[in-house]
Image (cartoon, rainbow, N blue to C red):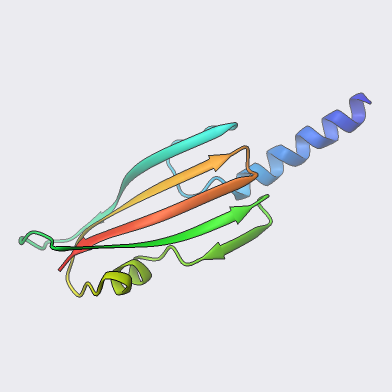
Length: 104
């Protein structure tokens, strides 16, 4: 029984690495982190906000397009002001990354 538990724990650890997203701070059991991705030299404010998202299930299946381009296109943004991200992971079973683009 101990061998089965050890193998299961090792499997969770291995799979969790694939589902942690791009967060600079991660938690083995739970992670919910936001931060900046990039900023441009744009000096004007931003009137539009677009988002794109990608999810991972069990660290085995990843779906979606969390690119800056997809988020900008979703809101019709042609001049990007700055970009943020939010990533959330639960024991590597489920992970989600959302990219938010601000611009005009």
